Length: 151
Image (cartoon, rainbow, N blue to C red; front, side):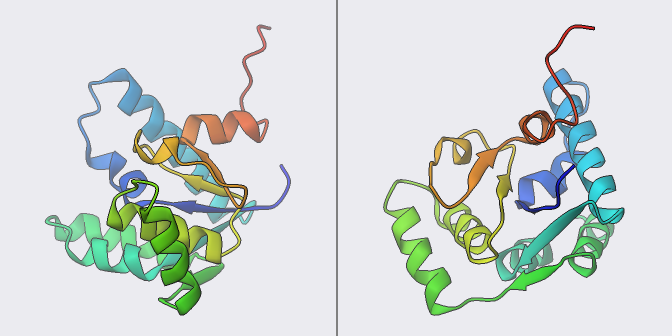
């Protein structure tokens, strides 16, 4: 796997706490778990941001917030609020993307991420020449970790 930089939005970190009885949620959770394994093994670079810090500090489950915060320490880059981030945020928000989601995308672009990984179906509709929007399963497929080929 080539060395890429990814940004996981808050929905990805919280996927583990969703109802796993739904097959799509279970599959996405396993894909995120594998992506996090690749991050921990230094096969993938992770970007973090101030909006992740903010959303995580509002987490209603303190143990979950503590676990999520550990990924900040494994990040190759941490993006703070800058004029560039705010300008990108305004442009992204003007396309109909919600405020926090637009900040996540703006931070991912500022961090020069190759991929913005999310399980938010509305966010996945956003298109940019600056970043590839994908869900965790598609990320693994695009990067050749899994394939559709029948054996």
